Image (tube, rainbow, N blue to C red; front, top):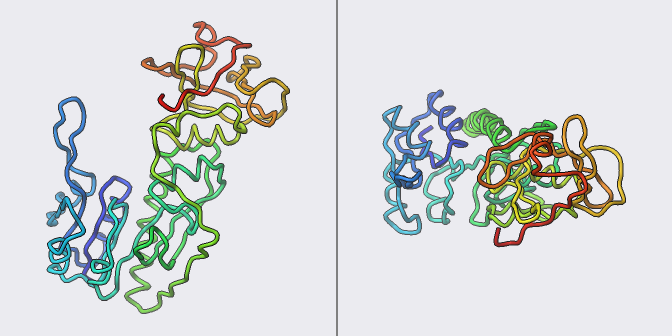
Amino acid sequence: MRLVFLGTPAAAVPSLKSVLSTGHELPLVVCQPDRPVGRSGKPRHPAVKQAALEHDIEVFQPRKVRNAAFRERLAAARPDVLVVVAYGRILTNPVLELAPHGAINVHFSLLPRYRGAAPVQWALARGERETGVTTMRIAEELDAGDMLLQESTPIEADEHAPALGRRLADLGGDLLLRTLAELEAGRLVARPQDHAAATLAPLLDRADGNVDPALPALEIAGRVRGFDPWPGVWLRAGTARLRLREAREIDGGTEEPPGTLLELAADGLVMAAGGGSRLLIRTVQAEGRRAVAARDAVNGRLLTPGDRLERCGDGG
């Protein structure tokens, strides 16, 4: 089949490489424009563009997608199907309908759960034990199209968003190949989503990292893993902002107020959390400083058992 691939970040590269490993034609790759990075502000290619250029594939980087010029450029490539993986722009029906087989999306969750821009992060933040990848036909409503294939995977106990995202990206590349093979053979059967069971995974905001210590320990630990590398999970220790870098729920209960540092254990510092739960803080980072083990934070008098950590304000 003849494909046009639309994707931007590193998470889309395994799917692009999967397509390139087959006999499918790929005349055009579409991604978002180069963005300035670092202090120099020098523009950098998106990961998908870099991968496409390495294979001498034409790259199109429109600033707008809701105009006739965008649709005409895609139509000129004469695609049988559009493949969309983390492109980052919402496509309208005139674009979705220009290919005979429509548009197929690789989404990094088990739909209908976690529709939106940050499914990996919110699955971890909500304490899910399992996630996966779904291929679907794209509809104008966000992540609401009919499902094609799914592949699930367990979430490892101490897995953070970057590692889980890489695993799902690789899984997505494999699932895309299976989807395209079934499509080409005429065996692909679409299934409507149960919209009543849908949950949302909105784009992360800096304020999401200002966590209330009254949340259950399991949820705080999930946010530590899910909000890595950004926005992180922050609490206030006196006048200082403190990031929790590694943490997990531990057994046992407490009647102390949430945020109270209870004791120094062999592998971390125990904090009271919501509902009488207990959180083991293993690694912390004061703002503007390097991350240290919780024991070193106590030895350095950054933290002391008996202190009480509080929620940072929404402004940071």
